[in-house]
Length: 345
Image (cartoon, rainbow, N blue to C red; front, side):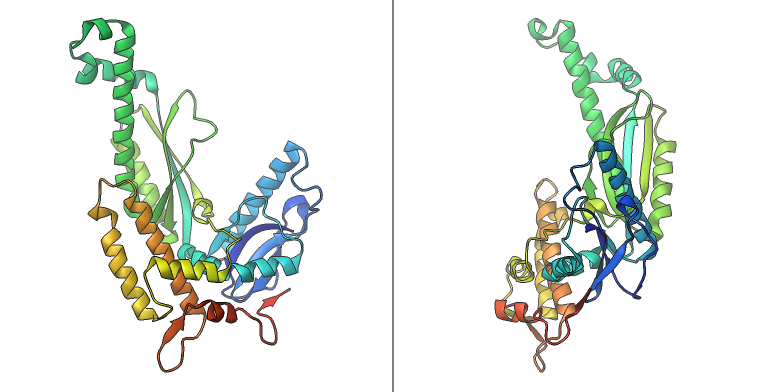
């Protein structure tokens, strides 16, 4: 089966009127409070088809995820090409990675991805720099090294690169307040006209702030001169914010999160929150603005908290103490089916 996305079941939907690759029907396979959208596919031939067939499958994958985004409050698209042997295997994957997926859906609930691209017309930019930028027009300090055209060209393109970095910081400063997270993106396959790409970033945006995000992009267009062109793609399923390692089991994920927050093997949810608040304060990027790794450490602490919050939110605490056990036997024990399995084919 070809896997498209994991969704928060919410109000359970028994049927899904969508078709996937090769027009096969989309099936919603349930496990606990999650469902995975998948469609039957010939595993012996999938991925070995012609480039045209693979492109058609990719387009169908994207169309299905976009349709799911309109039907469900939380959608976590899986990477294109992820497959399961059958419905039971798909449900098993959900159960094995439940804590990761539950935390991911909690984070993505009510949010979409907006991709911002910026381009410029390089020739007029270079001409303007050459006429005004002192880094280019200053007298040569070392005539033997810089008196020829190559020295001038080097200074010119160094100044253009410095301007690109300044513009990128300015764009992000305007767009970041509209989002809850961001991810650097790759240059688009094609640029409009003869323009050159200078900046791409994906933003995770609350659905009710999509219009605000678009307004800021319009304001950027009105503020900057005609050498700059902006494009936005979205709202999209949050592809760039749905990273998950399905090979990691529930205990591995919970134990790593617990250790990241320096917690003992038993703790209340309030103790988990307190440990996260302290670590988040210590690691907040605003406290180390010149440290390029500060944001990654802060995000790692936040992801650890999200995992433990999802685990504590999905299972009962110890009566009387309100503590949750993060010890291996107890974490694995809550996923052992007793009676009817919580995953249904």
